[in-house]
Image 1 (tube, rainbow, N blue to C red):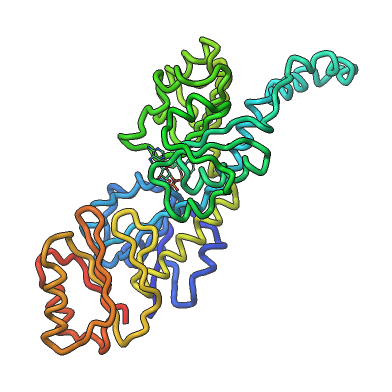
Image 2 (image 1 turned 90 degrees about the vertical axis):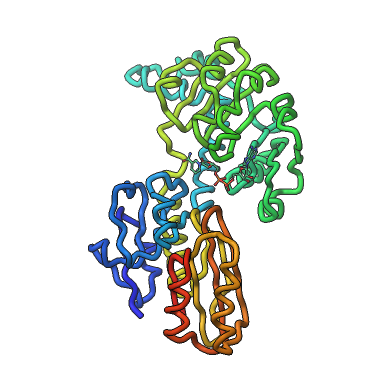
Length: 388
Ligand SMILES: NC(=O)c1ccc[n+]([C@@H]2O[C@H](COP(=O)([O-])OP(=O)(O)OC[C@H]3O[C@@H](n4cnc5c(N)ncnc54)[C@H](O)[C@@H]3O)[C@@H](O)[C@H]2O)c1
């Protein structure tokens, strides 16, 4: 079977090259089984009935109408963690440029570039740009997900004393963390003890403004705060007040905005965290894998609007997948149809995410047109696919 995919934005070839010969690229979005997208706005797009999947090569999905897609049985994927190393490396750079006045030093050299005696003058001027080292300093990490874990492990190998706080720590993250990372169960301990504090949590109601006056008041004199997650996680006016009061030595943020741009004590970047060739390649490879696995096997890995379901490659005579509303009695209705025809279900997974659910059924003999028609006719069934 040939599948068609459309790219709404340029997607790295290293990913697209992984599509097997069963896949054809199309410029007509209306005939695509799958769309790959980066930042293109999809909210006002007409979504064709043929479209089965949207894969965002990146993490943020606010350019994609998730509910509208779910309502039509279109599974939306993203690529969590694919840019984690890129962000980790910039966080390390952020710690270093906050500790030593590297930027001030570079600016000074530029300003004195035509001076024939620059080497001599530099020796006199350099004390202005002196700083401190990160070795042995306490680093507090709030959020130990894909990025936080990498920052923790890298900081350990640089000789820092690392403290991590994440009340929802995943098993995968726990396995990946270096054993020397101190587990902190109260975020206030991070605020009170650490010389550097870096935040790596998603922006949600619960995390918005978490670096606020109350948090800053508890911090050590001369603390360096790094924010490579989202600017709204910090009350940035409170941060500026902390800088003015001499409490905060530097605020390093990846989110240039009018509140912080050009302000004393702030090191601001134009959202460069994931801007590396490698991160874009990783995202493209992951997005293509997710689409192929979904189209060919019906598996859902890293979806943001449907639950994750992974049953591997189908080993039985048939596999059917059903996108449906997350309501009572749906499974009974599905299984009854197979039972009525004497078809044995050898494997079944049903999972839900919010208002939507996904059921994957492996059967010992192929499902016939009659069963598929009856599944489609059940109220609140959104889409039925015969995978095999
Ligand atoms: N600067 C950039 O270019 C860039 C790039 C990628 C991601 N990001 C940002 O970084 C954030 C983290 O990315 P990630 O890939 O590590 O995400 P992730 O989902 O892998 O990790 C987030 C972690 O935060 C934890 N968490 C949630 N609420 C928390 C709370 N209240 N306190 C402590 N921990 C909490 C979760 O348990 C999870 O482990 C993203 O949400 C995104 O906003 C920025």
